[in-house]
Length: 355
Image 1 (cartoon, rainbow, N blue to C red):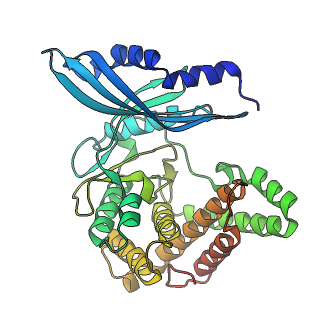
Image 2 (cartoon, rainbow, N blue to C red):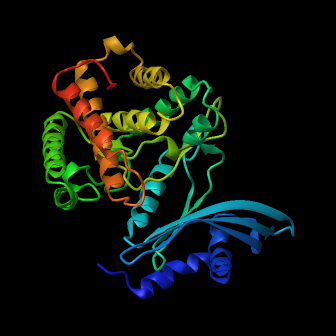
């Protein structure tokens, strides 16, 4: 569906300095009790997409404001906007977690501020530090063991939440309702290459069938849904605290999805920077830290479920890359990885790595 000019103009206001200053002057006193007025704002757009069917903006605002005592203070705020309205859900989910124990301690979420309906925009406080991805790609000799243990601590805290104590109606994860929708991308794959399309269709059907089978025995567990190294913010690899960003996909589902998604994405994002031997070692140490057990002692049912979601994550990345026509896409290798992970799950193989 074609995006209206009115929607484009509204979202574009997020990079208009006068609009930003007026909005912040109006809104920030609620969150900063010493706030008086904005002195200056530096706008730094990270993403500024205005397409035919969608608009996506991510902008950083480096703010200097005058407080009630006349002193100048600094704050760093981000805004994320999408014409599909998904950032409203991200705001609501982040706020629900922030108000349920993730506002303090070693395991936190980014601090939510407010949502602007007309701009479809979620404003939040910048998390201190850099992404885990940035750390291990900048220094390929780094020891990641401490970080892996810290990251498992965060996700275990999420999985332990009693959803009955949170006043929010969480969505449920469903492979057949992922974005983009399988019905749509399977057709596009078939139009491009009938055999490739047939392989994707079989893979999606097998994944969905196994997911439904496993989910019968699982209660309502809160999962992150998009657990990967770029969404994890820390100040150093020796840090004792982390913040997570981007809660668009948080839902009820199988907690092994978060483990499978993280280790497959770590593998995919790290293979050009870290040796295969080290990647395999870190993947195993991550899983062991989560269960607090040696790998050979973990119930094979958990290993199967982890591999199911490694397969799903590789398939999802294959789909994203398929639509990126302007780059060389390694979709054949990724698709093969997805098929192999699924075979591990089907055959009760005690391994979380493929060749």
